[in-house]
Image 1 (cartoon, helix red, strand yellow):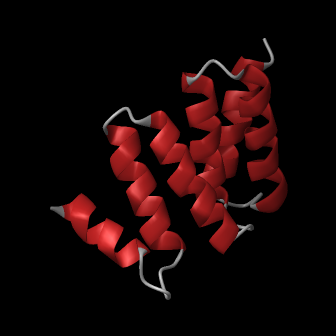
Image 2 (image 1 turned 45 degrees about the vertical axis):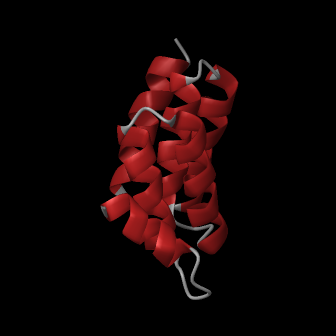
Amino acid sequence: AAEDALLKAAESADAGREVYFSLGEVKYSKEETDEASRWYQKAVAADPSWGKPLYKLGLCAMKQGDREGAIAMMNRVVSVDPLSPEAGLAKSSLESLKK
């Protein structure tokens, strides 16, 4: 039911980053990584300086075995939102990805 409500909200002209991110979270929790990535990308398009969906895109890339894509996303999180909690998580992820 929550997913349906979010999908309906996402169709609205005034849908924002939170709606897109929430849809990404629903899809990510259901292991639908490709769909989750699509919604996270929409959240990034709505607010390019928000690190949270960028970090989740990095996690999606990691799940899909795309090490270079994951590194690129984690670097982007640190670059655009350096003071966010996600930047700290991204730095930790980068350390393990670069090993």
